[in-house]
Length: 316
Picture 1 (cartoon, rainbow, N blue to C red):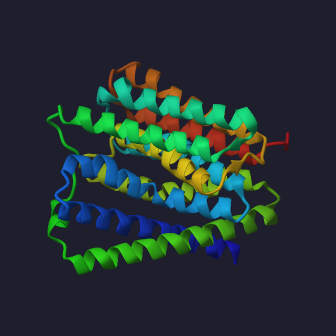
Picture 2: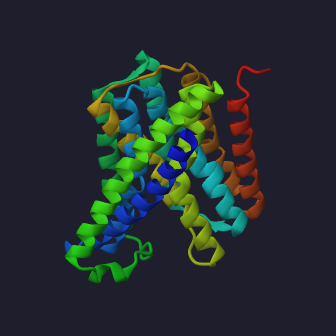
Picture 3: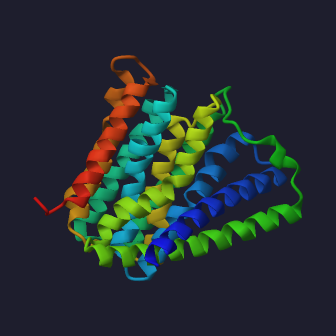
């Protein structure tokens, strides 16, 4: 039964995330917000909703390890799995803003998260608030810089003419699907963890993390297969920043998150930092500003190694 809850949870998170993005973009058009701002803020925040709901649910139900490792695991999956698989479908061009702003900010947030957790073994409300304020500052800089750019992210213009009734309906569907999806995914995953004898931290960094990254993976692969503009590296990096700053930041504001599993700090978070750091040599060697199919395979292979190691932890 627990497997059924997890599968249903996955499906509802995908459906809920899709409807929330649609309704958020349509609502933004109603308020005459520019496509550029919609793409960089509204869509990014909406696609982080599954992680936010799952982490909040886990923290409030007494499973802080799931809350932390959901974010750590999602960030690893976004780069190793989502970016890797997308690059294997078709090479991805890298924008210069990646190494000028997005990547350094992601690394700073990752290191600050490690420091906060290592310092006293808890992500406090004050630290969560600090992360969220840092996100607001990053978005301000991002939007200000983007005004100088001529290229604007693709946002579906058809959503500008959607009726208020449809927007409300999509919001309700998205909210309900995300709520029950996160509830069922956390419940089913905790039962699976108990049944197979692994910790909630392992389930959080693997099963739940992949589940909350499914919408990004599906969208990226479909776009690449259609030879349309696939998900950009900058968007994925932005998603990782949102996961740390908004998901953990807001969750810690609601309820401080203690570190209950030591391997989060001794192993998992270093994988998150390491797979993020390796992107710099990847985009410059051997061909500059491109993630080729071979590089994509390397990222997926690295992710496979990570998954193997966490499930065999302590067995050798």
